[in-house]
Image (cartoon, rainbow, N blue to C red):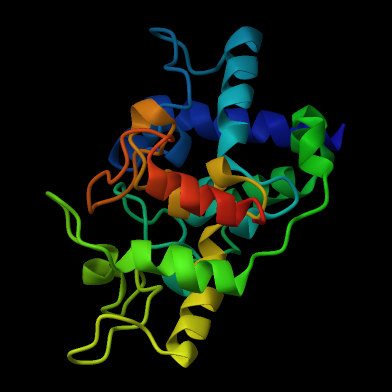
Length: 239
């Protein structure tokens, strides 16, 4: 019964994002990502079939059991409240106490998302290797980008989108201490064991290759077969 109420509440939020004048100024993240069905002309609610399609799409934006690793909840949440810096549509929730955010969080913490998730999601969470990060992942984050800025250009300048240390003047590599701090921050952008739920890999990946629509710095990888993307994925999987 509780799960049914939560799913109904979420369907209502998505429907509001599709028809209300309030939501037209700030669509919900699922609608922005193309994950929510458009409402039928003149309708204010979803059909059962539309709701099931929404469910299948929207659950790709959540990590069952962990609202604060779920793009659906952290991207539209203010950075000061624990959200990410991504979300071109602005920040919808200034606090985790917001009733909408709490509704979504209750759904993510419950069993209704996990029940439909692949059985492999219950596997043991792999550990992330600091050495692999330092020697293979971190160099990707400082490498030049053709047509785009390197990661450090935008993500080491402070503010809500900073997850890398600024390089010391004249240096092209990080010290051991800086690398440790980078490792601690970058971990918050990945879901161990699941590259395709990790903002670090999803946001700079082309949408046609399975990436998200977020990332103001452009798309670095056109395919999941890109060697850089494969290196990051191997780290997230626990190599």
